[in-house]
Length: 187
Ligand code: FNR
Image (cartoon, rainbow, N blue to C red; front, side, top):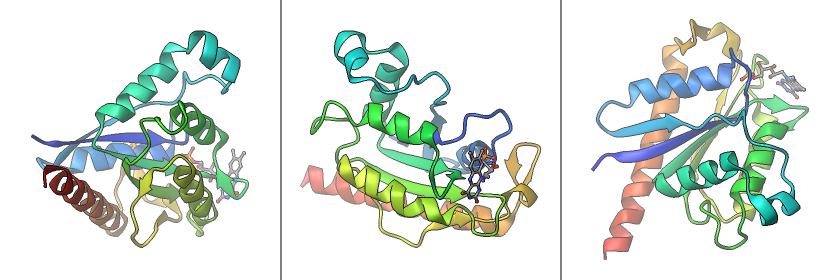
């Protein structure tokens, strides 16, 4: 059966470059895998009281979508040298219940993009570290950093072939990791 990937974009604005990159990747996967996006717009600020008393439907849907996916593709803009608060907040929801969260052991590919030539690279370390804290399996590979992203997107699609090829190669590495894990589980 095809591999199921879940895409999370750390930007919730309508014309987000990050979301455009994810949408383009989803369109470019062919028969190798299918990727759906989970928009983070409806995720409220994390509140342990709310989680204990009445977990919001959007947070439960996020957890269920992560649990159902074979792997995650997470892209974030760089906000003040870190990942966006929207993404960090969503990851906090996803990280619970502690030790039993759907992120635990999940193969994850991280990416950043920015109109700056630095491509959001200063958010990469924080994303990896935060996901490690919830025992996500962030794959080891050269960082996917897309600089001057605003010049590489037209009509909501990533049109720069070199950037697209690099990002698709990274997804290839994620699929290899998923296949490796599937093999290990079957053994
Ligand atoms: C930014 N931006 C930004 N860019 C960057 O390269 N380094 C940074 O530290 C920041 N910091 C930052 C903070 C805040 C609050 C905002 C709103 C923006 C610019 C950011 O990269 C740009 O807005 C991108 O277009 C955001 O990504 P999306 O929304 O296009 O996916």
